[in-house]
Length: 333
Length: 250
View 1 (cartoon, rainbow over the protein chains, first blue to last red):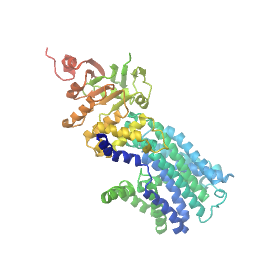
View 2: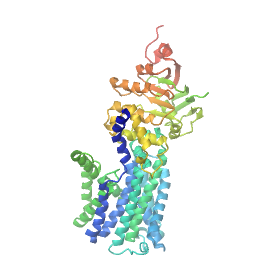
View 3: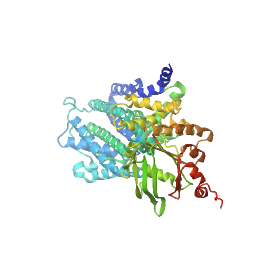
View 4: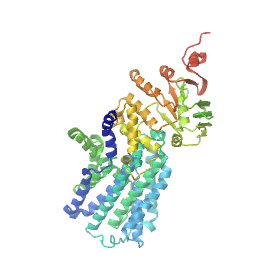
């Protein structure tokens, strides 16, 4: 009898922990919207493809920034490596998109592993500066190696073969959009697996207190390096998507602006929630598109104003605000 | 016969300053041992050297007779060494039960798994909940640690360390920052810990030391001044002079 009451009292906390990784209906929402957008906005599929690829890019940043607490201003390094890897393959006779995508991801992961093995020994501002420097060095290397990369003119002559040998990358971005959506979905599933795994939980432990992680016997450096490598691979795939669907790679893929913009997009959407990118990236890129048309010179100002408002009034990004509202007006979120 | 924990000639210099000076220390299995000393005696430095948070300038550290001087903090934890912190060092944004789950997950070696959901390990979650029940924390299981009063957080410190099922447990001022009305709960918990855990309690609070410890080591200016039973330490004139700040009657 006593043990029965104990068990029933145990149920809520234990059961909640055991259920945390289950899919909830709300998680289907971004995918339904993305599919609907294909039919509702057929004239905007070029922008839509870019948004999907950048969601993957921001998702890869969320893994290291939101979960492991690694602050970086050089995440474009891996996006750029992936873009150039996919671009160079397609420009030199191997235009098969899926294998190109995988090779680009692997190339970016290798760069992530190699640079992470050095810079992840540092913390805070030192680490921030080093991530920035890695990206700057790679961009300068790509600039100097103009014979290979096309330098400031960009990489010319990419020839991406039809997807699965069947679907040409058409001028209206029909194939590109579906391709980006399918790839994003697969990598989102993988990211979701990771963050709900014991490894993913250990990452949040590192974010909350490294000292305590050491004290419970966690190999902190190894964990950080692992997720940094994985996130670099994801970012490389995102870069490859952009390269393959636009059939062009410019130095901009490695730029500080891109590293900074992805941080902003993630923060606006919400950090460490896996869904922040699905809100922050479309919002940022659609606003950028609108502002750039309405005010071609000063559109940056409006983006900046948005960021100030989010930081001042919406801690935790848009998702953070939504969570607080749900808690206040609807009980459980 | 080997000891649960030993140090031989353990020394730490910060530049010209010697904060630990050739400390030879032995902790017996199942010990209830206190390390006391005035402010700046090097007590926390000693803990950091033993756990591996700091690298010694000289000397050796043995756990269970095995030299661990070259091992990382994490590897020492795997050998059965756990600690609590003088200032709460917890996963503040995570729930109480998650704090303990992380420790248990590390002990059981599941934390490297990045494919299966953490929620598929019912054994980890139930072990964590059982630990919380023992410390009277079950009702707060799902609350984020940062929402708990400081005294309750001190108990979570203990719960996380106990989740590691240590052979040697270093308690760095376990009741520090807790109102005296609540420190009784913490002392009760420490008193009820399994006998086979060797306890080293680093403390300021003399009531707590004399209630819990069966052996006391006094550290002064980075070196061991004297070691003995609580009665011997209380009566020792050198201790009264340097530690209790009283001059022994001539």
